[in-house]
Amino acid sequence: MGVAAPVGFDSTEGDVVTGSAVRVRGLWKRFGQQVAVGGIDLELPAGKFIGLVGPNGAGKTTTLSMVTGLLRPDQGAVEVVGHDVWRDPAEVKARIGVLPEGLRLFERLSGRELLGYTGRLRGLPGAEVDKRATQLLDVLDLSGAQHQLVVDYSTGMRKKTGLAAALLHNPEVLFLDEPFEGVDPVSAQTIRGVLERYTASGATVVFSSHVMELVESLCDWVAVMAAGRIRATGTLAEVRGESASLQQAFLELVGAGGRDAGSDLDWLGGGTR
Ligand code: ATP
Image 1 (spheres, rainbow, N blue to C red):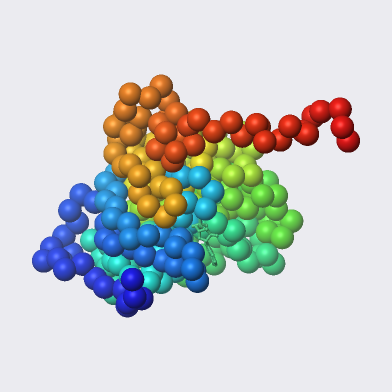
Image 2: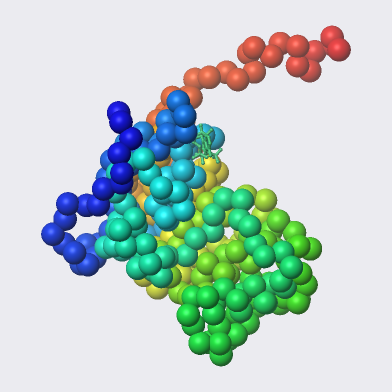
């Protein structure tokens, strides 16, 4: 396949939102010989808590980066809430919040300063930014550290600060890449509560994870990805099918069901050192 410029949807629907938060058609990304995303089609319903799951290297981060306008696809089209990500980036970016993998924050600002700056960049009035920042810092249990520099924050505090920054402008769709990785159970519960409240109001959350129990307990809709392809999509019940759990369905879908990972490591734990 040759590398072509990204193309838009050949759609007559214009700005009309059709019930899909995200529509992806024929999306490709290669890094040298490595196909990270191999021509995927994906339609994510609006107003749902959606999990994008897959093993390490499946292409989840690459997909989310292309969907959120952070990485240009080799080929394909992405539409978010009715707007083409690559033809109409400003419209899309105003409507989404993103917590990317390996989030970089301004280290020499305090948490509160960072939120104040982010909200103003988003074009919100200063008083509104300050009000929302106070509420988010409080709900996310960051009030006590709000005047501390971000450089001194722990991993979980950084994730929560990033989440607050992504929520500040009340986006229609929130994209989160591994939001619970490196987060303690108490903070995870807090993040979870915030996200559940946010989706209950009709907003959409799309998050990537390989923790199946988490996806099973949080999501009402799932897309399973492996080796750069979408293997299954649908409600939790549809994807789980006859399997006892999402974990089991996932292992069957990605072809790892019967692997005995320990069988080749006969030296491990034995008497020979
Ligand atoms: P994980 O769960 O481990 O984060 P993932 O599903 O998010 O994995 P990606 O990070 O999207 O997977 O990677 C998909 C494939 O693309 C991998 O084989 C990875 O090595 C490759 N890849 C991703 N980014 C780059 C890059 N910038 N340069 C070269 N290869 C890359």
